[in-house]
Image 1 (cartoon, rainbow, N blue to C red):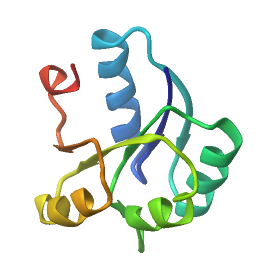
Image 2 (cartoon, helix red, strand yellow):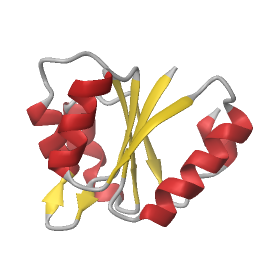
Image 3 (cartoon, helix red, strand yellow):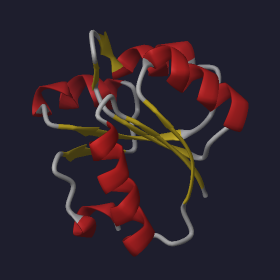
Image 4 (tube, rainbow, N blue to C red):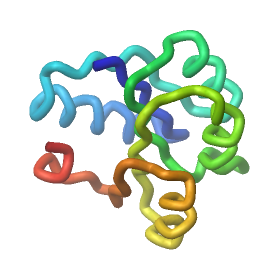
Length: 108
């Protein structure tokens, strides 16, 4: 399974990748992005099956990534510290909503 991690905090991406490798060894993290522009470019280039998306990317919002890639098909799991994004995230048909810090049990 091809996965892209999107988070403006590199440590969060590294921690999530480490946990994914422990519980989902079939996952192949093909890119890790920190901005909307970088994320959109990576999604078009790599055509992932799954995207783990943080909602706050500096001054930008993760929803911008979803808006700019709406013509592509991939699953999205929102990973954020802010549960206030949950309702809007499900309006975008995300697969799941996880709050940070992500527990390994939730990744399964």
